[in-house]
Length: 171
Image (cartoon, rainbow, N blue to C red; front, side):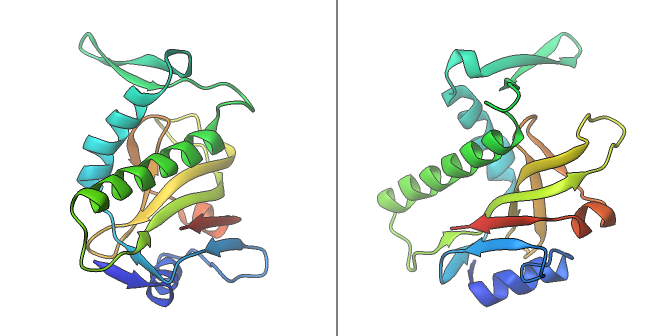
């Protein structure tokens, strides 16, 4: 589904993300944006992105039951949340470009997602706390979604986290 930048901004506002607030810095570079499929993001793009990382930039995480998954390594200030979010977003853009080159769409559009900076609150099951960058997108049902490239999970932001959004971008 293709959205123009006004529709994209309206969907972000509906989710509580203020793209034009005085304290918020947003960059929406394209005239139109294509929504993204959540299943594709989590089950195809994310594993391919992690696999594409050089061995020194990935590690494994125990997920229980004797199973491990590959995840990006965390290296403070060098390869941390903002780098994960930006690298993952760039990989999504390349996946979309490859698909468009192989099967040209009726209409080209920018990626209906990007990076988002906010203040994370401590929640059970994760260690995110304080300034944090993450990947966001609009799904095919026009829902604002947040995806954590560090572990491949979908995240539901609290009202306080949404209110703390400092900026983001989409191209």
